Length: 128
Image (cartoon, rainbow, N blue to C red; front, top):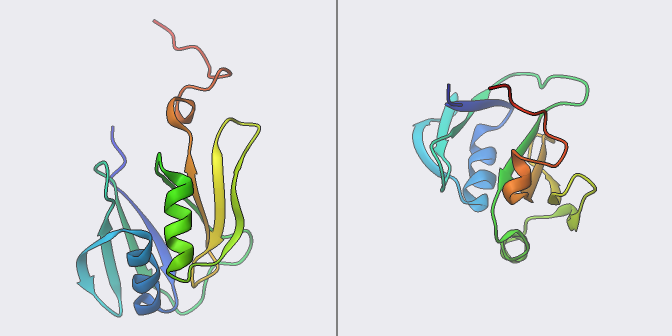
């Protein structure tokens, strides 16, 4: 099995497209104002946004994007006007993370975990 895509809601798809394009995603389906889909610069996963009248309540959505040059990426995004709620720092779970919000207040975490992303020391052993 492979993850194909994640879809998030937005009340303003056009504004969301601007934001995610700045992050580095490549627009591949443009059905504005109803729906858009992006390719991630690395890997096979895609990311889409669909228009809603009302955003879900509660903690909302958290989307993680990984890049091995996290600190440089954050620095570049800051020069493009992206505002972070937390700058890159090392977490106890062995990831380096930076936090921000998208235009719909979804949580975005830019991170680098390397081998720890799927294989932390506390990973459940696989059965043979």
